[in-house]
Length: 270
Image (cartoon, rainbow, N blue to C red; front, side, top):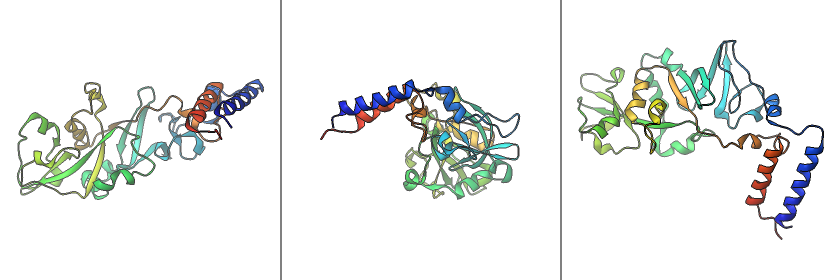
């Protein structure tokens, strides 16, 4: 069967659906996946997020699921654990979160690194949440003495010392995992088994079009144990067309997208 015949058949089905009473449009999608809240003053939960108790077809991945705990909106972050969500800015693709470990531990970083992911297995251990959020990885490094970075570039790759993990004979620093260990004094060593992702300082990101903002600016937000601005990656404009169960019913524009996608990705010739 040629791809032209397949295209003709699919177009016929699309036109038939359009002639029926109600072709789906964007409003139909949001009726199927309505917005919700955990409390009157809580953030609105809608695509690409969904409330965990709602239809599983209404978000792109489990890491975009939110849950309610009493009046609070909760995100379970792959490495930060349970986080309270205070606001979601959908047009600008970011949310404000506070890891609950900030409230429960006198030294949150110690707890975060205790459940960190081995750096050589990090990608495969992210499970269903690879590269959803704009983050960079940090490693914990221990030095026998406090030191002054040798250059501005080195200073931008290090934050600390971390007071709750340091003492008179040991100074702990957060270091950009993507950088070489050689930027540190030779008597420093890595003292964590893995890495912990931290959110980009997205307030500065527009100033660095060729890459992420300096690591230090992002790490210092963790050191202050303050609210974190977490940004998610831009979704393909046609992603709603691919939500299970309603795809091929969503709208004429979605049907056209799916038709193009099917014909381009599959060889139906015999």
